[in-house]
Image 1 (cartoon, one colour):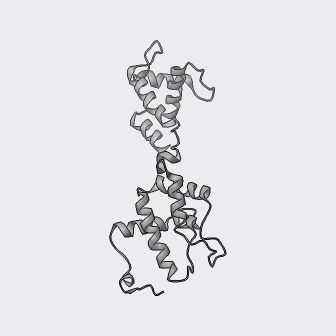
Image 2: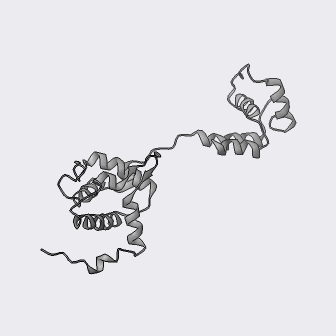
Image 3: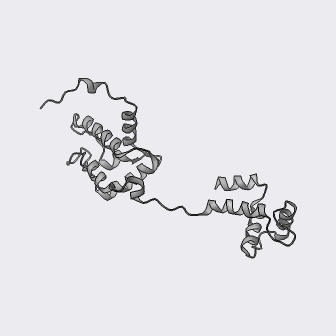
Length: 195
């Protein structure tokens, strides 16, 4: 919305004048709340409209440019965002988590439909591949396995969790960043898994 009003200011045209311009363009009778004569006078003097009330080329281009702000954009499908085999990828991701209840009383694995919604947000927000996601998730699960999964997030909350300020945070994105930057916990070097 800010961009729209910024364009009006750049065009040196008021919202009311633009409204009258649109009414002429679409052949609609203006609302009585707007002073049609006053706004028409402004449009004529600024050469947005000709004397015969036809629009100038400048006004037609301006109207089409500003109309683009109000066109609905097509929502991307899950396939567009996550790839053709996204359901298989989500299943593989979910299976990286233990099939048990966590200390919080929630199951570590979340149902696939819920995960799809979370991954839609993730792929709209971040630019990672499934390989990055698997590597980051494996690292996360390994870290919490050593702690008997205490305070571990569910497969859904690892992707995104809403904060108290209503914003979303993603531990998955943090782990992906960490792996891409090549940093890891120094304790990993000295840790051995004893069977």
